[in-house]
Length: 75
Image (cartoon, rainbow, N blue to C red):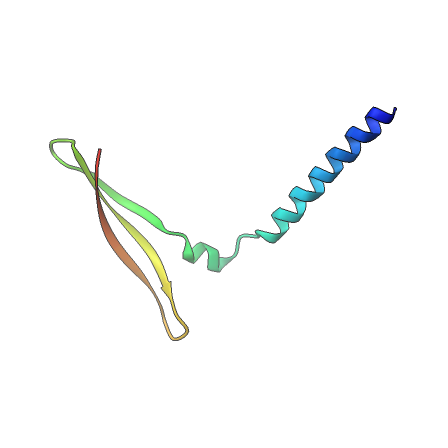
């Protein structure tokens, strides 16, 4: 019986810890906007490289806009 109580206490403690962490990390519209979005991948004709874009929100006190960057990577 003591072992069951100990295991129950540990399980309950871990469950409460995860619930606390999850409550602190609620998804918000601001987090959605700040998420970098990767898109438009294109493989080179020889298959050695890939080029893709990444959109990222740039937010300041007076304006907010998206900045698109182009990346080139070896495959």
